[in-house]
Amino acid sequence: MTRLHKESSQRVTPPCEYFGTCGGCAMQHVSLVAQAAAKQRVLEDAFGHIAKLRPEVMFPPISGEPWGYRHRARLSARHVAKRAAC
Image 1 (cartoon, rainbow, N blue to C red):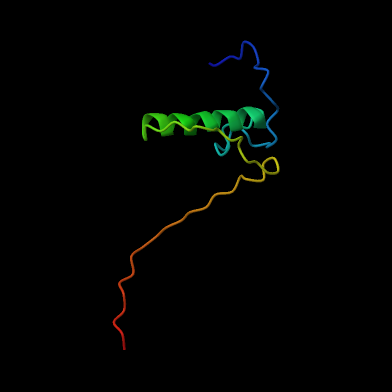
Image 2: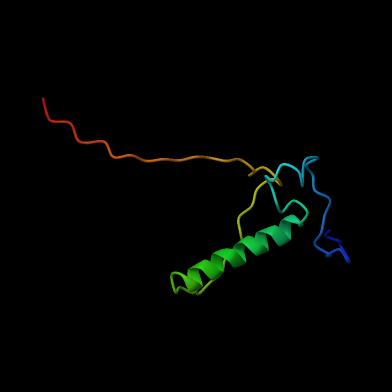
């Protein structure tokens, strides 16, 4: 059993009534500012460890309406052979 001993100052009430049961948005209990900061650190770490890149200037994250970005997109690509000229 997991117990919460002390809540973080960044903890918020998840806006979705299904939080914790559907598994979709795992960070809803974290403030939007803290979510953006955590995601930025993940990106910085990936650039540093994988690509061996360090930015000279770090710009603040771009954000829109709260929870307006929770959409999924599936993108695919396929090679289509060039058609012979008629």
